[in-house]
Length: 291
Image 1 (cartoon, rainbow, N blue to C red):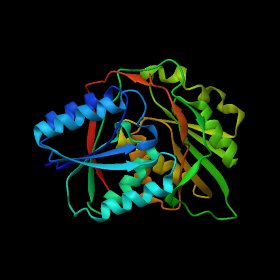
Image 2: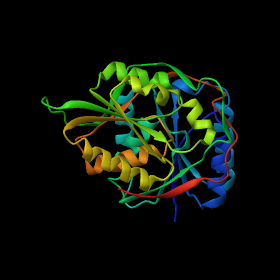
Image 3: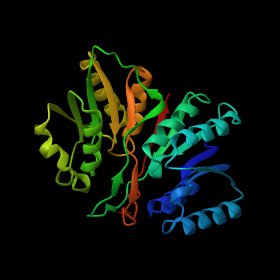
């Protein structure tokens, strides 16, 4: 039985709508509400938090608040370490990854696997994404603490990129790391006009690259395809960056457990579009991740 839900406060419609579905589906005893304090002033954040706290008070659900800073990954790691140090083992957690930054998903998985051998997860797609920019003004890529890989001087660098809609975010990765090889993992199908929006795939021929199609929404299949590709490039140092659907963060983490020499890179954005997405797709994706 799900006891604790871990979620990140968001401004998109799918945050409050998704939490409504979660609270109606599970008899939750506690919610761990993570807020990035440097973005709490964005529109809808205050109202979304207020409404959630009121609903939890009515249902007598405990809310534990954890405040992080999007711009301070080292301090975030310390905060999460301190929080999970006090947590007991074998709690049934539900990780609502919908509005969690990928870097934080990976960090949470690191700490959660110290408490349980599996994690329940849930993800809500939006009804639509906006037609304009989603994120912009990127900072330098950064490697995840304790997941920065093992690099051998006699090996070339292969950069694995699970693509999303923001191709300029991918450009910053390539410019920063200057890899010898780029492996582009593109989302199969045309949901949310994926192929039209993912401009990077169309221009990837300008690099020494390989394009691998897979379905990020199928965690098991994506895990296998990533594993096979990592083995194929075993003579290279490998950095993986997930910019596609949040579920790809789960398949990449599974592969880190299989190949701890690979590194995770994250490109933080400074600006997020308030109209990032609209609505929610009621056909959510949930499952159990063995870690």
